[in-house]
Image (cartoon, rainbow, N blue to C red; front, side, top):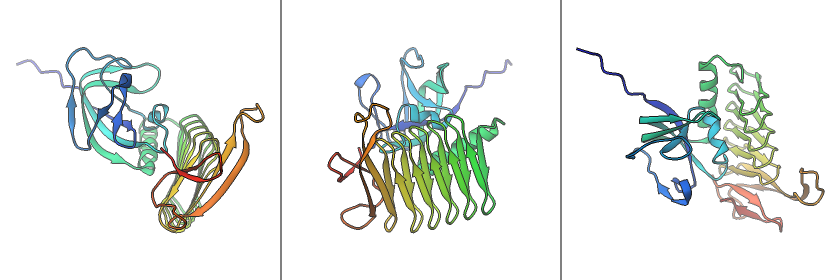
Length: 267
């Protein structure tokens, strides 16, 4: 009896808008966590099929870390890959579980180290430091007073210990601080900073930055005039700080500043 070829199953990561909708070819498709979807016909990456990325941070190419949602998925059936990054198209996809920003960062670090590439770093002891300087790098500090820094574009930094600090300085970077009195800073364009630990602070001070925190945390955001100087950096017009849970600032909600310097919920 001949051995049957085992069907390829790909574990990957998918981005959605805030309502778990994707818009291929401007045709909205609604997903649900735990559901499986199938598509008949020929599958080709970037043209037709259910799309996701094997490397978690590649999803930021298509969905910015702030204001969108992400999930770990399982792809099977017909498989087609695109050479530019780790994008995979498939005829079948199962939306396994939703991931938070720290979850995406952890997955990126696991992906990096499982392939023995020196693009991500992790520090697990107290006062440890981790740095990732390449594009789409991931750095994680899990010990108390640890520091994680990601300086490349679309980098991700996570500090999960008490009084930990996470910094993402590249464009579309993501920084997350989940420990007590942690600090998360995103300074690049379209950066996202999240503070979910008690008394933590999230600061997003780049162009079109966004920040969020849990009740009692602090957020800092600014508004920049990117046309003013012509240098691409953007003159600071407004900067404001707030304590989540006060003055109408809602917990676990992304905020940015508008041109008048007012807090607005980020779409």
